[in-house]
Length: 222
Image (cartoon, rainbow, N blue to C red; front, side, top):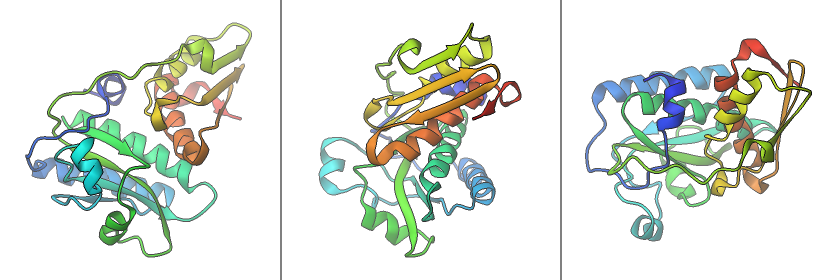
C-alpha cells in the first residue's frame, strides 16, 4: 500500500487491541517523525505503552486501548499548527501503510499527560496527539461534502485539481466539519479554513492531502 492508497483506506479508529506495536514499525515511525521534525523544526514524539494522553472519562466512554500515540508539539509560532497538521497527515498515512490505525485527537486528550511525556520543553505548543495501534476494526468513512461545496476553479478544472479536491475530502478534520475552501486558477491554488481553534491544523492536513492527490508538480500555492 502506498500513501495515495492509504488515503482511501484510513479511517479514524478509537478502539485498539491490547497488542504492542511491532518493533520494526516503531523504528520506521520514529524515523518518519524525525524526518518531519527536521523538515519543519518540530518536536513531535512517539510514546509507546502509555495511557497518559487519554483522560479517564474519555477512555471509558469513547475509546479503548489507546496506549501508543504521537505527541504533536513544536515551538510556539504563528504557523506551528499548520506545520503540525501537515506533518501529522503524513504520519497517519504512513502508519496506515505499515498496517496500523490512527485517530487524530485535538480537543479530548490530556494536555497534562502529553506534556509530562514530551521532551519538547515547557515553552512548546502541543496541539493534540495521534493515537496509533492495531484497531479492533478498520473504522468507517466519515460523511463527506460534495466537491462543489468546498471548491471552485476559474474555467474548466483540470484533472489534477479535481483529484486534489477528492483527496482533500478524505482528510480528517476537526469534528468532520470540512470547513475549508479550495480555489484554483490556471496552475495556482489557495486553501482557506475556518474551523475555530483547529483552523491551522486542519489547513495543514488538507494541504497535505491535496498535494498528494494533485501532485506537487502540477500547481503552486497562492
